[in-house]
Image (cartoon, rainbow, N blue to C red; front, side):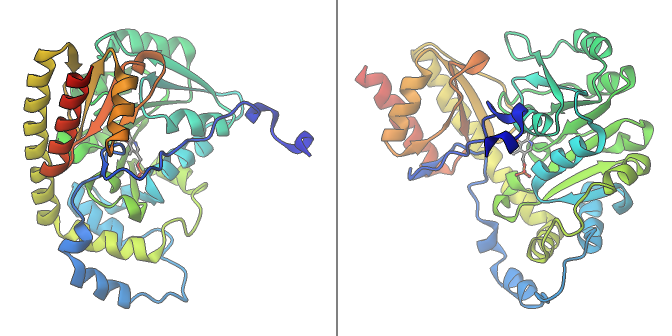
Length: 354
Ligand SMILES: *Cc1c(COP(=O)(O)O)cnc(C)c1O
């Protein structure tokens, strides 16, 4: 039977989303606020009106219009996806033939590599510097030497939380002949964007997601680019990729911009206080806190693995990577006040128990 399988996938490891029964879940960069509770009546009423016997609107006309006004872009420049994960797959499927190169940073979001490999690409990884910043000129040289079809960069970076200055992003887009995908999954927390630049470059694609602002269960992502690239991408997009329930709830929530903004402020306030607490802990023992433009904080600590396991055994789930440059790192999503307190108490106990 396995003679029928793809040989190039024989050693391929699927993405393993960690499932656990911890009380405090701080491992997936989700929002700790349940928007569904905030807009419950409105959500129930839009769901009631859905004609479930009909296919969804293939391009999500209404949702694009609302997201366009939320994000300050023309709806004709937007494509919707089943999470931005699907849009990454669509990008690869549109531009990458078997054997073509794509480039991603190391570390950066792992799905770029997974979809790259699945579409037969040779995936090249360019290392961030020791402090997780990017040497933009050297990166541009690397790209111009390797000539990949597509370059993926998340800004801010997941999992480091680090940013690339807008002028450096624009320099990158201008200086290479590849499609440059700027993944702005954490835009709402960072506030800076290159979305206003889409018509100034023929090779820029932007990704956004609803997942980090409290809608991870919906599976909804957005791709924003110029009309020429969008036309190519539409050749590949599955016709009914975003279901009607997601489209309706998505439209409702992006129309309630104030609710989103209030929630983001609340998350950012908890983030500041968590950062302050972690910083004071880090002075007691030796661990490093990286700057973050997101809703999570990356720490580097010699006993990362032990701490990760200790936290898990104490009902707190954080993200541990366990290899490469991230060997000693733990990524902590900002939780609500109680969750952050439980996290800090557990870290404190871990330090005391040693
Ligand atoms: C979470 C995340 C995504 C995935 O978003 P979905 O819309 O949930 O598929 C994409 N890119 C980055 C950098 C992320 O952190």
